[in-house]
Amino acid sequence: MAFGVGLSIGTVNTVCSTAADRSGKNPPGRKGVPPSTWRTTLTFDSSGTARVGRIPRHGRVITEFADLTQRGAPVARVGHRALSAADLVATVAYSVAAEVLGQPPTGPLGSGEAGIAVTHPAGYSANLVGDLRTALDGVGLAEATLMAEPIAAAAWLAAERGPLTPGLALVYDLGGSGLDITLLRVGMGAPSNPVVGLPLHSVEYGGRAFGDMVARKLRRTAGSQVVPRGLSDADSGELRGEHIRRSLALVYKCLRIADVTMADVDRILVVGGAARPPEVAQVLAKELARPVVVASDPERTIADGAAIAARQALLAQDSGGHRHHSLTGLFRRVTRVAAL
Image 1 (tube, rainbow, N blue to C red):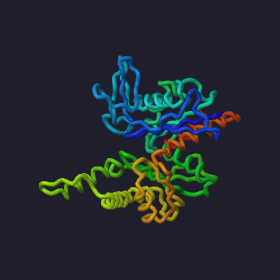
Image 2: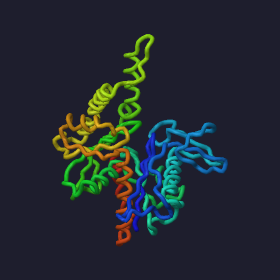
Image 3: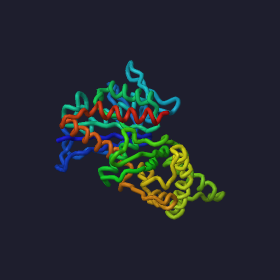
Image 4: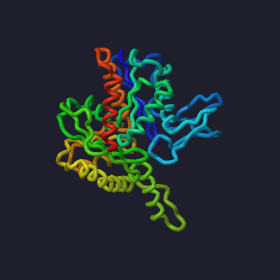
C-alpha cells in the first residue's frame, strides 16, 4: 500500500493529512485514527525531546516561527544546539509525521510504504527553500519532498474535480496570519512551472487582521459605561464581507503583474483556515464573477493536496519513476521563478 503524508505548517496551525488507497488502512506502524491539526508551537523537555502543539502552564513555549521571511524569527537553544526558524519548522514536520505514522519517519521513505511532502509559501526565495531543505535533511527527512502551497492545493483540485480543463486558476489562501494570492496554470498541458506572474502575500487580511477589525468596531460602538460582548452574526458577516472586498486589491495586483484579467481566470480555489465562513466564497463569487471552489474544510486543502501528491509520487516510483528527484526538481524550479 502506497501511503502519502502531507504537511502544511502555518503560523497558527499545523495540518497533517494522509492519502491511501480505498482500503482505508491506517498509516504504516500506526493503529487507530491519527490526529490532524496541531497548534504551531514547540516545547522541549529536559532531554531535548520536542513536543508540538502544547502550551504548558510553566516553561517556555516557542511560537511565531513558521514564517521564515520575518525578521528576528524565534530561535531556540536546546542543549548545545542553536535552532533557527527553519530548524524549528523541520522539527515540527518530523514530530508530526512520527505521530501520524506511529514510527520515526527517517530513512529512505521512497523504498517503503510512506512518502512525505512538506509545503511552504510560494513566495519563499530560493535561499529560504534551501534553508528549509537543509533543516529537513538535518532531522532525517532527506527523502521528504518540498512543494509550494498553491501547487499542493492544485493537486487537491485535480484529484477532487479533475480532469481539469486547461486554463488559469487563482488560489486565494486566507489563513490565520495573512492572505496569499497565486495564479497557476492547471489541466492537461500545464507547464512544469505552473506559477503565472508572482505570488503575493499580505498580513492586512486573514484571521488575525479580521479579529483586529472586529475589535476596532467594538471599541467604536462601545458606550462610556457599557462594552458589548461581541457582534451579532449579521454584523460579523457584514464586516467579514467588507474585509474580503478590501482584499480584492491584492487579487487585482496579482492579475496586473501577470498581465491578465479576471476574464482569463477559469476558477478560483479558496483555501485556508480563515476561509471557512461562507461569506468568503460568496463575496469572491459575486465580486469576481468566476466559479469558486472551496472544500468543506478549506484549512485542510493544502495538506490534503500534498498527501495526494506524495502518494502519487510513491506510486510513480514503484512503477519505475524517480519520486524524490523529479518532484523536488519541479517544486524548486517553481520557487526559483516565483522568487524573481
